[in-house]
Image 1 (cartoon, rainbow, N blue to C red):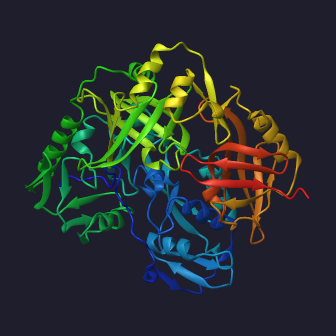
Image 2 (image 1 turned 90 degrees about the horizontal axis):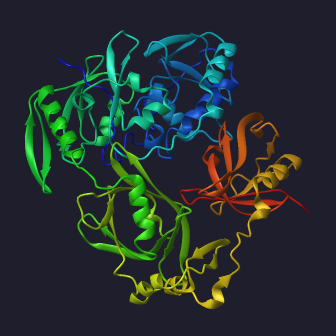
Image 3 (image 1 turned 90 degrees about the vertical axis):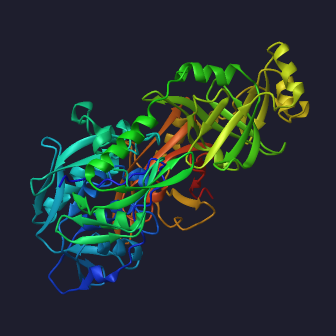
Length: 558
């Protein structure tokens, strides 16, 4: 029977790969001798990033659906760990590790492990997962350094399902196939085009179903040890297969194939039947030709209309909201709802395997417009969609007076919106967007005080920095952060010193940026690329993420 790969990634990008894991049966109290280990604390802190607060795998951080490839290594269970209060526990599986991650606090956390223990790691030279024995803390430190958790950058890949596959050998010498959602994710894990196998559409398995079919649960699978597991949901599938390399379906089972939104039940009697369905889906997904490329579509959005009306629909055709928007040549995306509510974000057009994508980032009040939107080349209008909504752009739907603005000469006027200067081609367009002459300002940025050089000087030449506010919470205010001139940072928790990295830079689209990377517990959620929206140097820096998170980095200047 042909083996199927483990990856579970939905074309609709909505698969939940894990349910909350709080099953204490995976943890057994044990008095086996352990040694204090900073490495186990650092490893568990880094592993926390792979899961959300409920213990679910975060999809964008786990595109391969395999802990060895997405994280760095996996423990060979059982292992024995110890808490900072001296209690030792034996952990039998990954569920036990997740339970520890969910229940650890600043007062109670794992700081010890019993040596020796084994881990599974990926060998890039052989494309094989190998078992390595860790005999002592020094070897554990070497493993953590090889993983290079501090310097891992988040891959900015678009959510387009155009799968590529790589073949990997598991520790038993058997081969299995890992499917990445697209080439970008595979390259982020270090694979190159030469590593991709042919006929990926015949091999890939998308665990959540996709746009043309869904699994009809319950179904049964056989995992590597021969056990038969009944799967009742997508969550069950994630739990059963996330920590194995190969599994087989138990045939027959049924799926629902969708044709014009009508579900048709189809019986799958063999792996060949499933591959045929998947191949048909892949062909249907990729058979569109488009008259635009990324450049011509971008130029169309800029030139065709100064002020668009966007109507947002759900997949049932019900209108959800409507906005006025500007696509500016400098990458600014300006949204106006009610006259008094205006936001500025960023936009661009990208192309992945002939699929054109409109990318919008940075909106808060109009957050439904954030994300990657697939351009519908089959529609005569400017229409885009994702897995939840459809947006239609209409120039005719805007105030008719705005149509006359195109006949007036270019005479730029500027409006200040939340500290950012927005440029309109002329006063007519600004007034059509809801502003008056009283709102016009000089056309300069006004943000030079927050240049990267000034930010860097303030961070490195002053001590006592902390995250005093994170989304209106002061939970991180007690962690002092030291910013070093070599781009590293240090902070302390529970007597342990943790490291990280930082940099300040200028981005042609998003403006001035501050990039932060924290190892260890507590501060990981502050890692990422932050837009510098305001500063009062050398006392405070106001930051905003693409997801809408707000953070204030400050120090006591009294």
